[in-house]
Length: 116
Image (cartoon, rainbow, N blue to C red; front, side, top):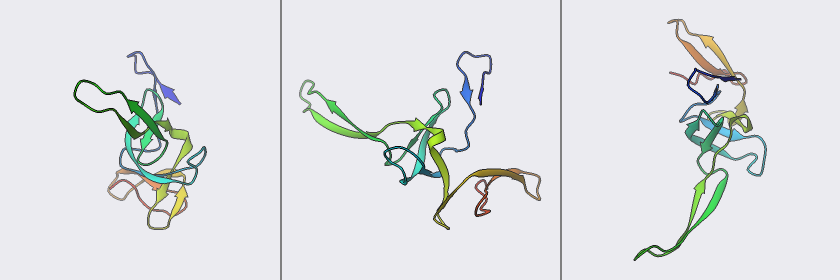
């Protein structure tokens, strides 16, 4: 669901954060596991390391030589699922309150707490 904070573009709510380990659940990179390196809230997309690699051809400029660069492109956040490194399993995310009164994210299948 998108929310508009009165500042123009709508911002999407995400189930993943920067630094989370995720698994791609659909598309050409289905099954790949990587770490979220960037979150793009206005586009509803995330950039995952080693996933959705694209080739960019750079022309030579001045004394620099032309080259071919490989970089990650954004994918929609709905195409990724949080991943447990310990259990090697993807899972949906839930929320719970700890004894200290802090709201944390929890993997539903494994019970692993994500936020510390």
